[in-house]
Amino acid sequence: MDWILWFDANWFNATDREFARQVLQRGIAALYFVAFLSTLNQFPALLGEHGLLPVPRYLERAAQSGQRPRPTLFTRWRYTDRRLRAMCWTGLAVSALLVAGLPQTGPPWVPMAAFLLLWGLYMSIVNVGHTFYGFGWEMLLLEAGFLAAFLGSNRVPPPAPIMLLAIWLVFRLEFGAGMIKIRGGREWRDFTALYYHHETQPMPGPLSRQAHLLPKPLHRVEVAGNHFAQLVVPFLLFAPQPVASIAAGVIVVTQLWLIATGNFAWLNWMAIVLAFSAVSDRVAHSVFPVIPLGQEAGAESPLWWVVLVSAVTVLLLVLSYRPLLNLFSRHQLMNAAFNRWQLVNAYGAFGTVTKERIEIIVEGTLDADPDNTAEWREYGFKGKPGDVRRIPRQWAPYHLRLDWLMWFLPLRSVHERWFHVFLSRLLAADPAVLRLLREDPFAGERPAWVRARAFLYRFATRAEFRETGQRWIRTPLGEVVPPVSRGWDR
Image 1: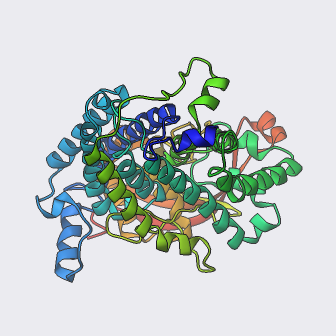
Image 2 (image 1 turned 180 degrees about the horizontal axis):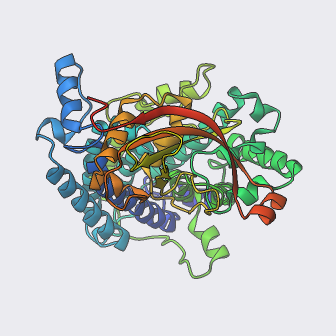
């Protein structure tokens, strides 16, 4: 009977998905709020008019190269930090209203317009963010926001085609990540990936060390559970109830474990929100009786709404062709967009796991001579490891973009342009850049020299922690950027 409720006598209405719709709309809106807040706090210093990689210069180079720019309002209106902040404040206000459920009380075009506004504003930001916005969860948020625009309002039943497309999105997210791992590093196939991952992931959380210190047999169970959750469970999302709801519950539990043991911005939270698209009101009510049952009969969907949602469904199904082929391709792409609007994308993460953790530590000194007698002081970052005694904080779903890029430096090159500019801004004691850090060891004073050193980090064993009080053990590997002074990067 639950399967019949999924496709009501009116095929368009998913009358047993009202709870799922509420979770999708409010959850996606909440993550947009976090994304706009992160952008408001970090974008000007990273990419603003005087940022590390200024957007005006990026747009100018793109225009000179003759490349067709991705859709962004900043090609129509010149970028300014003031306009960027206005977009962020608008996004924060609209997403807050959606979380509160106010637009959903009107006709279906009202929440549709609100979500399309969020989608357009954030796409305008992502498409000029290049290095600092090149993460898979950016396109995931864009795709989810576009889809949420067509979930309707409280005045119409949840549209079955859009609920199915939401399941298709979480399927691609989970199954794509599973296939990337199977095709990737051997450590996923021999079940040893979790011997390293908790220690070497980009931004550990407060429980990452405890997870890393679990017995190795449990790490192998973790990998097996991951393969089951990503390679088998996604297919069950399309099964009749209550199987689909149980499959969604498995995804939620596995994502909560990832949230507890790491910081991956809003990636895991979005997976949880999207998984609810497969949860029926009856199953939700049976687990939590406070959740009301869906209405068996109610307002009809107006014809214009049925036609619009049907057209969007056809569009997204057509755009699904290449992502579907990609899932089963031997040359599977990870976190790839197949169109300029970043709709129906390919997802995946951690096809290989880094075996060692190398951290770039930035230091400065006030001494005139940067020799071995100089007093070097370490800059503290908010999220990335530094102080060996400090417990890593839980930041997700908030995204610390500078800290994430610092993790990539040893894997790429410390000579990336943004990092050289970053060092120059530290020499100038730039207030906007210093606000991105947890600790400025010079309290706003300009250092005479800065340098970057590489360290090998590993989690301390329980015995080492009892002896030293250190949560990390680090070994110096040498200088990667020798001492530099003001004007060195001109």
